[in-house]
Length: 467
Image 1 (cartoon, rainbow, N blue to C red):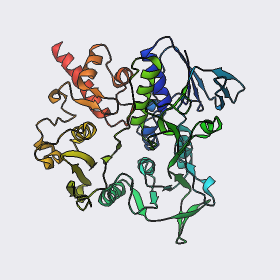
Image 2: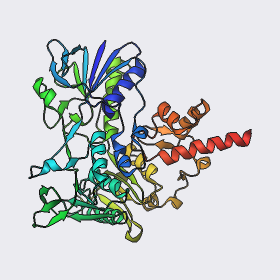
Image 3: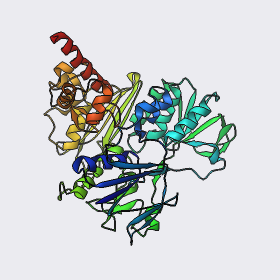
Image 4: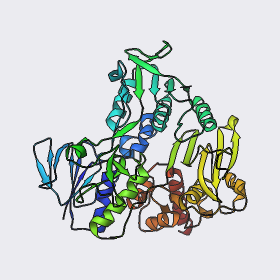
């Protein structure tokens, strides 16, 4: 079988690896428009902040037998002959084709928008850092997750940053108003001036103009105004396209020989913009392509949005905007706020099940709550106890590996337990890079890195004690 994957980002790269892990004989060719090896887009803000190098956010190399064509753009799909054509004049036949083309940044239709730098790729990151080397201040337009990450990344380099957002509070899709306010205050403590309910009308050579006529002086303007699925290739090939490439529960498009995964795919009316759903979709497609599981289906994802930065830790999941005044009267909300310490915790409960949560600031129970939300299991008798780790006998600090059972899930993104990390360590993986290559732990949102490093360090110490 000849498998062609268009897109070498976090979705396409994962699919190639998943297929190769299941079948050593399938011929796999991956086309990537970028010239560099796949990297973790989630951690680009760490590169901006200077806390990680580009090499540190690279994804593990493809296994043997995967042909990767970097810097090659696919220009057309001929479904009749099952061939893709590339910008360098070449063509590649396929038996199965997977679209993992991702998204492209939205650029607002305002005068001077081309003077700004959209924050999306590693190349964008390098352009921003090059401009930051001579700029005295920066303005980030867009207060969603990506804009918050870009602002805190630049502020981490000591640069004065102003974050502008059209809505009334930051990350309004994931957070309620109070959480958005607390997040803004936490960012202010990092050197980010947050301004909400403002509209940018033009970008000038040395500043940003607002609808009020005010001009904010800045030599560096970063756009983080959202993304849209890249679907032109699929549309030109005659595949069904709505907001994204329409797929069924098998992740198949309107052509049974063509699949779509990740940010370019639209499943059951939803286009997911996070990495976890893309990886879940990749696993389903790999099972179906290789025959490992003919019954594999994608049923949608329960989204958990994560942000982890110096002094700012956030997890938001499910129906976060519901409150006690829900018209149906079926919702119970448990809330705790301590603005002075940058802490906001909210649980949304329906029928004794956790259907939403916001955890902002230090939240040791985030792993437990994520599992309760993901699995839809019943809550303890006193839900309020979930907000405070001292009330949970099974809550185990990441800095105390000895108290963690081997079944404890350390990496939520890749479902890696402490026991699996221990097994890899015993097999010879003695540092974080080796454990990441073996388990993929730390290659998602990156929030588990401290825990993984702590477990590895503890295991190394135990070896010295035994010696």
